[in-house]
Image 1: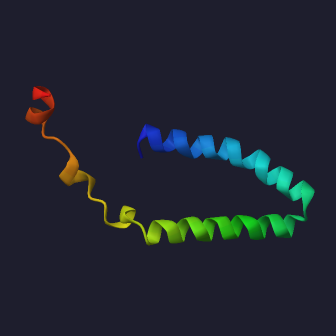
Image 2: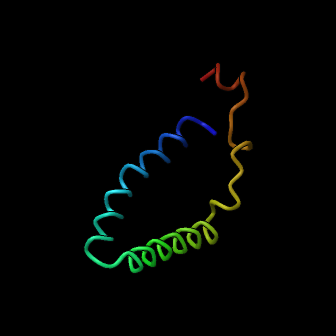
Image 3: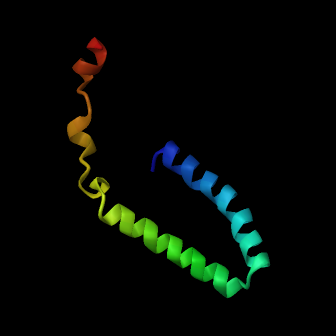
Length: 70
């Protein structure tokens, strides 16, 4: 796992935890968990039906020689 992915993951935890706590305080915890499940489902569906699923990073990378000439 790259450092960027770890940074984004931990950054989202820092942002989402207070919002989740505030939501659970404003409504019941079962509603907050339902909202969380809905958000996770929507994000999974967005990724499932996007071009992200067929992305091929290796074909877009430069070779060492190409990187040195730019």
